[in-house]
Every structure is written in structure tokens, then in C-alpha cells.
Amino acid sequence: QIQALVAMVETMLRSVGVTSFSIEPGEVFDPNRMRGEGYEVSESDGVIRTTKRGYLIHGKVLREAGVILAESVERPDAA
Image (cartoon, rainbow, N blue to C red; front, side):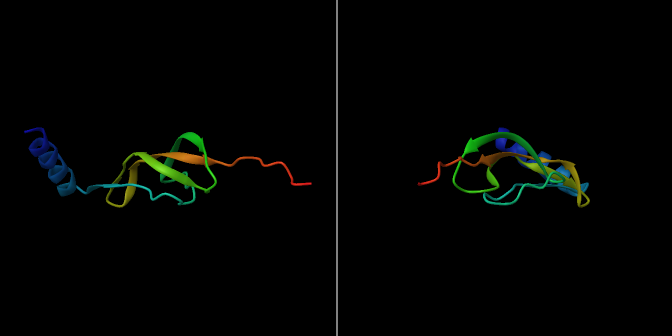
């Protein structure tokens, strides 16, 4: 029953122009579409994962997507 309720709410939101979006891993951080919610050490750059979907209303950001960002590791020079 909860799934049916969620589907009904999503349909209603779409009918008034609200859509959701998420961010793909590796995307460059865009403060207009994303809200950083933490860091994790990673060898990759940019976004590691999405924690919360973002929402648009008629193409404008209603809520930014929450993301975890990569924190690079300082490596000592091999001397």
C-alpha cells in the first residue's frame, strides 16, 4: 500500500511540473544542482554518490541533490 501511495504522490507532483533527478558518480560538483553532505577518501574525483534526490519544478531547482564528494589523498613523493 505504501508503494501505491508513493506512486500516486509522484504522479501528482509530475502533473504540477515537479521532477526528480540524481547525480552520477564522477560528475563535477555543481553548487547550483548539488549540496555537499560529506567527504570520503577516494582516488576518483568529483561526486562519489547521491544521498538524496534533487527536485526540479518546471526545470528550475527546487531542492539540490545531496552528494558525497571525493576527498583526495595526499601521497608522499617517491624520492
